[in-house]
Structures are given as structure tokens and as C-alpha cells.
Image 1 (tube, rainbow, N blue to C red):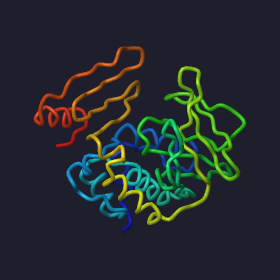
Image 2: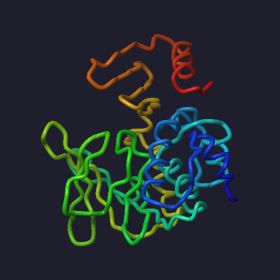
Image 3: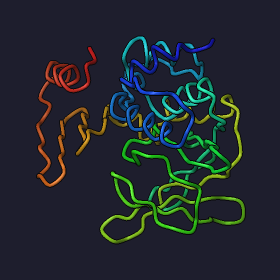
Image 4: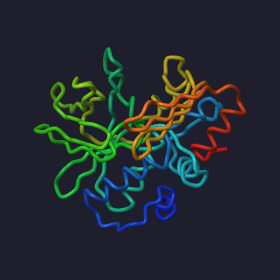
Length: 251
């Protein structure tokens, strides 16, 4: 299936020029993050998530839903490729405060523009608004924080984020293309294993221009820069449904 790029761009409310550039990639990433939430609701509804572009497109674009990394970055890859970007899917291993996860733990994208490579990721939850250059020589300042890319072991890059003046590792990756089907086993794992963070509780979250809105089974959190985070308890399924529609437009 080929996606309808006009419908996709309308979904993320992008209506500017489409001249291939690092600026366009940055604008698409930011608008994607602001308008398509990260969510695991289908996992808790026992609806299988398949690595099939048509079904993901129907869910995210036509049904106005969100998804998790395999869906969000899997579909974003197709949009970028359709628009003419030179892109590759990459497998990243997420740091869990003790060690790095297995291969194919997370799907992200590397785009090459004018001979320079950029890490773009719309499926990680809290991350950057703009792509990160694969440049190990300098800090990269983004609206969502300060980041640094360095080398890890022989063939890998490592992404780090500064948190309270301490560098925290985010994930590591080998900069080579992976086929979509290579992520199938880990996609199943994250839907079915009690060890997966996605099977423990419902989650839907999206950034705002100056904060974040997150809804879980028991709490609604609304944060804004410079203000205390507002937390509201979720007291019933009806209240969850109300918040889901009010803040994410999903019934």
C-alpha cells in the first residue's frame, strides 16, 4: 500500500512547503509529535498490532489514533520516503537505568540530507522536537532539552540527555538499515510479555508547545514550563473516557 501523503500531512496539520531540507524534517517531526500521541491502548484492548503499513495508516491517519514506536516511526518512515527523503530504519537498544535492552527494542529513523545524517524519532514519548545530527563533537540544544551523541563500543552511537546537569543515556544504535519485519518479534513481546512496560498500564501522552499531557489508568498529568504539574485522579472508566476525548480527541 502507498500512503496518502496529503491525508497524513493534514493529520499533523502541516501545510507549508515540501522542499527537502533539514528544516522540513524538523518541522514534520515537531508537528507529528504535537498531533499524534504515543499510546498503548490497543495492547490493553487485546487488539493485535501488526507491522503492516496499511493497518497502521488506517489507525493513525484515518481513525485519528496514536501508537507506539513501531507504528509511529514505522509510518513516519513511509511518509519521509514518499516525500523523497533518503531514510533508513534503525534498531535502538533503550537504557533502563541498569543496562541496554535487546536489539529491536525501539525503532527510529536516520535521514541523510545534503550528505549529513540526522536521527529523527516520533515514537519515543519525551524526546526532541528537532532531529539530532549524528555529530559527536558538540552539544545539541533542543526545545525539549540538551542532548549529546557519542560513540558506544565499536560500531554504535549513543544518545544522551542532560537531566539536572547529569548526563543520562537514552539509547544506543548501530547506524544501519533494518527491514520492518525484523522488528516483529519485539513488537509481539511488547504487546504480550508481563515484563514489557506497555502491558502494565494504559498510557497515552503527547507534548504540548510548553509541556506535556499524560493519561494513565489512574492519573491525568498536565505539565507546563515554569508551573507545578497538575495531577487529577481517574476515578472511573467513564472519567478515563472523558479525559481521553477531551485531551486527545479519541473516543
